[in-house]
Every structure is written in C-alpha cells, then in structure tokens.
Length: 225
Ligand code: 5GP
Image (cartoon, rainbow, N blue to C red; front, side):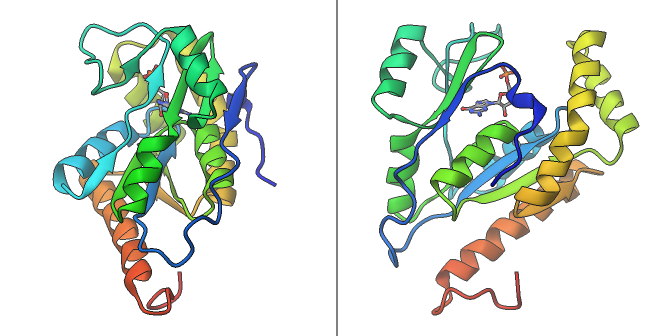
C-alpha cells in the first residue's frame, strides 16, 4: 500500500483503475514518470530528455489554473475550464488527477494508452502523489524520483527561481522529507541531481535499461534490476 505523503494536502485526487494488465505480451512502450522534490530540477531534466531523445513523447497535462505569461496552451498545459475538466474526469478520462489550492491538474489517459500501445515511450512530469496514482493504474510504469543533493542546495535553488515567497519555500522544504521517503520506498529509482547533465544521463540510462529489458526475449533484466 503506497504511503500517503503530506502533499496530497487538503486536495482531492483520483486515478484510473482499469488499465492494469491489458495487452499482455504486446510490444508496449515505457511510461517514464518523473517526479521529485520541488527545486530538485526535474523540469530541466525532463526538458533535456525531450531534446535529446526524439523517440520520447511527453504527455501534456490538463489544468484549470490560469495560464502564466510565458506558457503556451497545448505545449505547457491544455488550459481548460473547470467544466471541461470535470466532464473529462467524470468520463474516466484521466490516468490521474488532483486538486490543489483550488486548481485541477490531470494526465489525460487516451494519449498515454495510445502511444504505449503503439510501442512508443511516454514521459510524464507530475507530482509525487500523481506518480503513485499512475503506478496503481499501470504497475509497469517506471517511476524515477529526482531530489536535490541536500536541503541547503534545494533551498538555494528555490531562492534562485526568484518567484517563490519565503512561505512557499518553507512549505516546499517541509514537504521534502516525506517526499524523499516515498521516493526511496515506492519509486523504481532515485536520482540525486548534483549536476543536471549527469542527472539527465542517469535518467536516460534508467529508461534505456527498461527499454532493453522489454526487448529481451524473456523480458528479464540483463543483470538484475
Ligand atoms: P505549476 O507550477 O505548473 O502550477 O505546477 C507544477 C507542479 O504540478 C509540478 O509538481 C508538476 O509536476 C505538477 N503537475 C503538472 N501536471 C500534472 C498532472 O497532470 N498531474 C499531477 N499529479 N501533477 C502535475
């Protein structure tokens, strides 16, 4: 039973429950789920992975939060109304979704399922609880947890963003302890982001190992997992 971390907060959340175990034996892509502590650099790692690997598709989440100045609809998120979101949610159209501070965010299920069925790899960059919900719906998902080398470094990175209030930095740092525990206990791999190039290479290697395992005749890892 996955542990519930404090970042589920007072929010509501849900996951798809009917995807596990479909198409046994079919050539399926790998679903890479990147999550981690705030300020660890998972966004940058995700962007670098996408640049370096044209075979990696990424899922664009739906959200009801307002678009920020530099964000593009259909690229950063699909920005939708609450009614549109709830309609898709009620039709079981999200692999996982959650509500935090009044905003809804979710991973539309159809794109992910279609790409995986075609043997294409898909990357999600979502929050820790969302990653656990994905694992419940699709246990073969590859969960990679990204964390900063230390709390001091995490704080430094959050401050360097220049967009966080002291209260929001404190909240994110407070949450990190429990999230890192979930990362260690529930995720397939933990990557410590000392250096973004090296951390990206590590995630790419973890993905490659899982892909190769999928291709091996018996589905076994070449030398353990
Ligand atoms: P933002 O700053 O864009 O409002 O929020 C970013 C946070 O939301 C990050 O932790 C990101 O991983 C998470 N996130 C973005 N899309 C989704 C989603 O579809 N599902 C979940 N569970 N988290 C998401």
